[in-house]
Structures are given as C-alpha cells and as structure tokens.
Amino acid sequence: MSRLVFLAALALTSALVAWPSSAAKANTPANVILITWDGVRYEEVFQGEDAALGGQAGSLVFPSLWSLAAGPGAILTGQRPGSDVAVSNPHHVSLPAYQSILAGSTQPCANNDCGRIRAETFPERLVASGLPRAQVAVLASWKKISLAAESREGTVFTNSGIEPLVDPVSGESDAELQAINRAQAAEKPPWWDARYDRYTWAHAMRYLRAHRPRFLYISLNDPDERAHRGEYTEYLQSLRRADTWLGELRAQLSQMGDYGRDSVILISTDHGRGKGSMWKDHAASIENSRWIWVAGVDSSGRDRLRPIADAARFQHNDLRGWIERLVLVGR
Image (tube, rainbow, N blue to C red; front, side, top):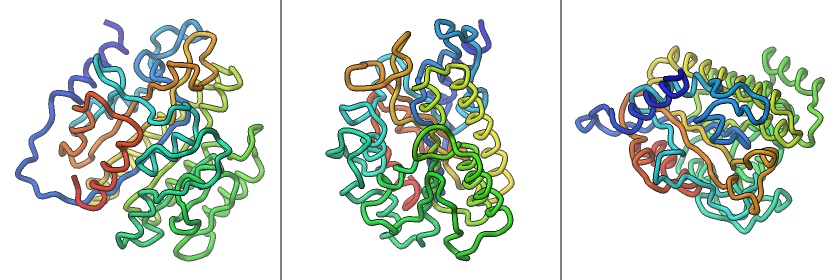
C-alpha cells in the first residue's frame, strides 16, 4: 500500500467513523478560522501529484492536511463514493463562488466583474450579533474578496490585495506590521489585483496572535494563478507552502490555551479545475471544475463538524449556516 493510499484510508476512517463521544459536554461557542485555497483540485488533495502533468505519480502533496484529517473531530470530504461536494453557483468561477460561501446562497453574479455583493454576508451578521468589528476579520490575497465579504463597506474588518494593513484596534502599524506592508509593496506578483500568499499569511498569523478573533477568514490565491499559467511545478509548490502553513497554524493554536482549544479550522476551495490538458482552466463548460472538497478540525476533539462529514450532499451555500452556529452557539 502506498503512503498516500494508507494516509487517505487512515484519515477517512477517522473522519467518517471514529468520532469521539461528546454528548455530555455543554455547547461552547467556537472561534472559527476559515481558509480557502483558490482553484485547488481534488486530484492533488486525494490522489497526489499528477504524472500526466509532469508530477511524480501519487506523491503526497498535503501531509499536514492529511494529518489534520486523521485526528479526532476532523473531516476531509469530497471524494467519498456517492457524495456530492460541489460549488453552488453554475459558473464555476471565483467571485460567484466566494459570494455563495459568504452569503450562504447563490448570488446573481456570473463572473469576476460583478462588483460588490448585495446580500448580507455572515461576517456582517456576526458583527450585527454583537461581536466587535476587529473580532471578525477577512484577510485576502485577491483584492476582490473584499467585494464578497460585505455588502456595506466598513462593516467587517477586511484587508486584501496590496493594501497596507493598519491595525483596527490601535489604528497603528507596529514594527512587524510595517515590515510585512513594506515587503508586500516591494514584491508585487505578475498577476493583477493581488499580493503573494506569503504576505497574506504573515498578516493573518500576526492578527491571530494580536487579536484572537472569533472569526478569521484567510483567502489564498497563488495556486489558481499558477495553474492558469500552466505552471504545474509552481502550482505544486504553492500547494505545499499552504500545507506547511496549515501545520504552523495548528502549532500556533496549540500554544494559545483555551482560545486554541476552542478553535475550529475549516478549509475549502472556490472551484475545481479540468482534467488533463484542461487542468489550467475552470468554467461552466468544464464539468470537473464544479467538484470541491472540504476539510476541517475541531481542536476541542468534539464532533461539531460531524454533520458535514455525514452529509451526502454539501455545497458552498451550506458553509454559512455551520459557521454561524459554531461562532454564535457552538454547534
């Protein structure tokens, strides 16, 4: 049995069968960290590198993700026989997908130029429920994520693209923040309206340590850009970096006491991609690009994510309800 197949079997067995019993535990509101990796195919998640595209057949791409999914209170779903884990919008492109995720319903947005979302988003709802604005944060590599995060600009704390981040509490930039802002301005990627993911991640980890937000959304963009350029080696590198950061996030949370123990991590993607020569692209005409995947872990070891794993059908629109319940009531 290959290492990848063994880890897949271990993780799926743990995620779908061996759930810890927590019926006697009171519901505790959770801190939720939502991460999206733009345009990451299920093939690399579940099958490893693609030999047809120049990769090493079956070589594991996401060791941290599989390790996460093998633990108690964890899920990794998207390729279970009979399951339907897919985008909600009919277009299979980014901004419609992010609007679906953040609004919890399919929006009248057909492309990446549809502008600001018109419906209330769940980050806005969390602020309306009484959470301070700084406790609901959206940090994104792609500038247009801010258009999907809030229908009324300024309701939620957002920072995206190469926009310098100013601390929402102090209104200042400390030495660490200034260094990240300078670096992202000095090293702009060749694609439009974005910064490299490493700077988004650096901002997010600083924000996590400084503010311990109740909801933190981290939107990473590099994989999709590399794929559109047909750069499979660079695409794999961006996936492995994101996976390494996931391991760093777990380690950081383990050092944060009750905050870390009460945190839930959810990870997904906005769309899939084509197969073979079509791997660079995604669209309504490319059927394979509708398939997504969802992973997560409840650091408390409770089974609050179990309904996601058990669902035969799970789509972008379903994420809002689960995240709101986790943050507001703990289940």
